[in-house]
Length: 341
Image 1 (tube, rainbow, N blue to C red):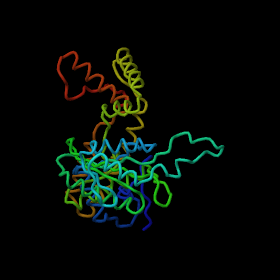
Image 2 (image 1 turned 60 degrees about the horizontal axis):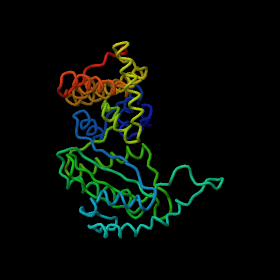
Image 3 (image 1 turned 180 degrees about the horizontal axis):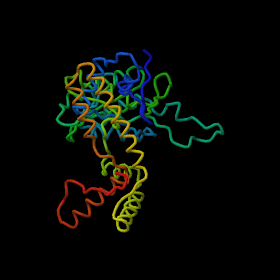
Image 4 (image 1 turned 90 degrees about the vertical axis):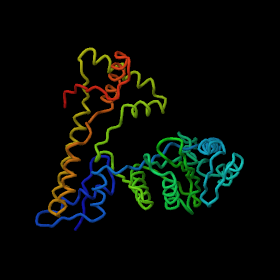
């Protein structure tokens, strides 16, 4: 049977093959594979999700050295290299980095067609973080991250990794040389990151740790208001956040509610997601997976509320006002009167 996955805008993941099963046409018996059933069960039963993200990358050898020093806690932590070495100490780690010959990376000397330097500095490395929520054993995260790095970069890109346990979620920093030994550059886009999440989740499960990797839209995950503010401040856009909050305050003062035209589009996307989950439940029913079908329907009926970035900021703003008036912190944010709800 020819498979034609149904994809929502901006989504590209092997997970979406699950939703293609309902498109086989009349008269065909549709069944999920065991791996698809396992993926569905992990998602609707809210198995912990892995996190894989790219946090930047140095454009000069000095910047890369500074990042290595930072993630190695200035030599206090042990850093593992792609050659299996475990180096500790600031000078030893700096010497290991010199073996990457970042100053000889050909790509950094590229020019535009008119001979001018490129508009943006070339990344010499990619900084990647792999993480699992607490209370995942840190040694399991490290083992899975080590396998991940070998699968993706060994014999192609130089890399180094280090485990951090100073936060409640254990995580591993990986620094990967952007240019391979053959001179090709590592390109990381959204589909690559989604595939990496699925691979890292698989490797965590091989370590005996329950782990999942499902696109946010299918879990109904909303970014928190803190995520919105932190993201803007990370890129020095605090003035943008301030102007948005001022606009929200003015609108609340005048109308008593927040209206965002983008909310309707998000609701439409949510409706499509819920419909697809219901189709999944129907197929599971026909296949005799009655209990899992029930879990799917319950999951689809209890997805988190849809909020736009503007509505999330308004929620945080109202919570701040409430706390100031009451003189105590508030753990939950007041509701936003959204006319599109």
